[in-house]
Every structure is written in structure tokens, then in C-alpha cells.
Length: 231
Image 1 (cartoon, helix red, strand yellow):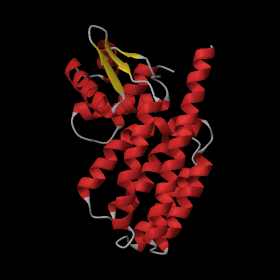
Image 2 (cartoon, rainbow, N blue to C red):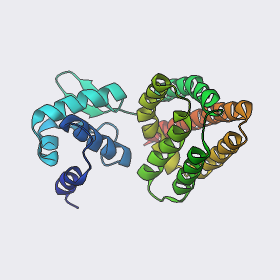
Image 3 (cartoon, rainbow, N blue to C red):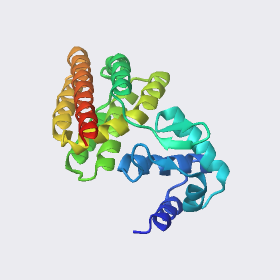
Image 4 (cartoon, rainbow, N blue to C red):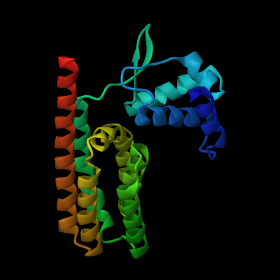
């Protein structure tokens, strides 16, 4: 496969999503999530500018966006690299999620419409049947976002959304460990609580989900680190 021509085609056919910086950042983010750009890979500005058919400026600015999201780390005099997945970072992300997402649940359960619940269920079912990790991750966030959007708390949703950029990377670990079916069962329990308008059950469900998934991610990262040390 010609990665350069394929990436340029993706950008050429992608619907308008903003300026060139956003387009390049999204394209690089997709390559990181799909594993095309693995942890530790150097991001060469010249090559990426040519690959995406843009000048150096959007690529450089995209690096800044991705650095703020935790996808990229900048080393002085060495350049930009794909950030590694760490146990400490995973712990912090899921700790914050466990604080924020139950708030979104408490506000959204009484307000959510039948149409939004039906949409969330359709997204959950699509996620359960999709074979591609990157599609599953997007549908996973779409499911949660559909529920939380009913809260009517845009600042809260923005905070949760910013965390989910990093959640996606760590969810690749779960997807590759075939944990997606377990997550689907958790989602079904959460959605059932929404349908019953049971705020207490929904809040407890999402908190339990956060704690269990966060612990599972850390276990998988620990195993991966030990395998890397052994090799």
C-alpha cells in the first residue's frame, strides 16, 4: 500500500472539518489510533507535509494540538514523537473520568429523550458488531456523548471530550485484548438504567465501569511493559 497517496486521498475526500491544522491533526491522530504510527515513532515534518499535501505550518501547528491532547511529545533538538502509553497517565485519565462522567449521568438521565436513547442503543449495537478497532473506538465515544449531551452542561461535556482524545489511545489496548464484548455488556446495563430513568443506578453503573476499565487498562499496560522488558 502506498501510504503517502492513501493518506492524501483521505484528506482530499474528508468532509470539511475546519482549517488545514484540524485536518492534519485528525489525520495524524487516526494514524496513531490505528497503529500506523506506533508509540515512539518520530513524526517528520517534511514527510508529513508532503504526505498530506500541505505546507510545513499546518503540520507544525498540528503537532502542538496533538501534544496538548497527549498524542505527541516534543523533545528539544530531536523533534516530535508519538507519546507512549503509561500506567500513570492511564490512572490519571480514569480518575478524572470517574469524577466527571457520573456528574454528566446525574444531569442527563432525567432529561434524555426516547429518541436519544434509541440512538445510543443503535450506536452500542453497531460498536458490538464492528470488526475495526478504530471504528469501535469512535462508536464507543459516540455512545457516551449521546447520553451525556442530554445533560445540557456544555462546559462539562467539553472537559469530558478533551479527556476522550486520550481515552481513545488507551482503548486500543482494550480492543486488542478483545475486551470490547465486556464493555458492551457494561454499556447495556448503563443504557437500561437510562431507560428506567434510574439516576442512582446509572451513576453507580458508570462509576463501576470507570473503575473496572481503568484497572483493566493498567493491568494490560503493565503486562505490555513487562513483555517489552523481557524482550
